[in-house]
Amino acid sequence: MTSVQPGDKVLLSFSYCGECGPCTSGHPAYCVDWFPLNLLGVSRGPESGEVSGGDTVLQSHFMGQSSFAEYCIADEHSVVKVSPDADLELLAPLGCGVITGVGSIWNVLKPGPADVVAVYGVGGVGISGVWAAAQRTPAMVIAIDRVAARLELAREFGATHVIDASTEDVAARLAELTNGCGVDKSMDTTAHPAVGSQAFDSTAIGGTVLIVGVAQPGIKLPVEMNSLINGKTLTGVTLGDAQPPVLIQELIGHVGSGRFPIERMQRRYAFADIWQAERDMLDGSTVKPILVF
Ligand SMILES: [Zn+2]
Image (cartoon, rainbow, N blue to C red; front, side, top):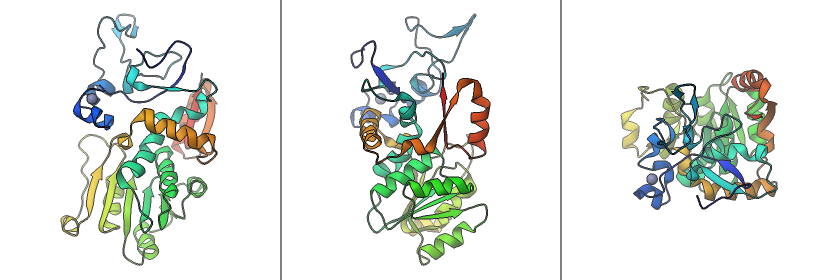
């Protein structure tokens, strides 16, 4: 390992091989070995210091690290060195949800000044997407969710309009806001086929729907085929197509300057309060729980 030394502070993100075509062309989230390195739990080999419990070898490198513990064994590509005075608790979410949301906007949807952007679901990924979109000052940034408090928070992160899907007809409101033209750039974080389908229907001719949420295997997304003839694009992305060392450092700069109010999306919990953190996340009262060991 050459990028870090003992005592360095680091943030953690996903892993990649660093040598394949996608990795060397700046797209490590599409690494040819992404699934085995991050999800499938293949063995690191006998020299790895692999984690075990009794006779059982435990899955120890989800996202190349499995950091849901006081200590972890991390792949070097999962490690991003930060400054000695960095507040790691504050910055921890950058490695996954935040780069996913920001990268989805900056790397894929790339909204221009005339575009209407809609973000479906404003949890950690969606609220990061709202912020990233607002930085590009498009015509509108519309946040859609079922939790009123999250919609209020989305305004703080730059949403110009909000739609409460628990009380409002989302398709009708989007049509009204866009004079019937539809949304130019839609980002769906919900992984719910009915939401993705509606996002596609509410997208303008020539517009794009980006699927960001991870659904259960086998889930199908129904879309109107003739809308594709209208030049609509339906696509998806892994982790915002981000290069973690690059985007995380850039975002740390925006946190430091006060431009990115990451502290407003999070609440810290002692590890003993993990179930409270889970409840607060599920009911929407906390966007991003931070567990502190
Ligand atoms: Zn690779």
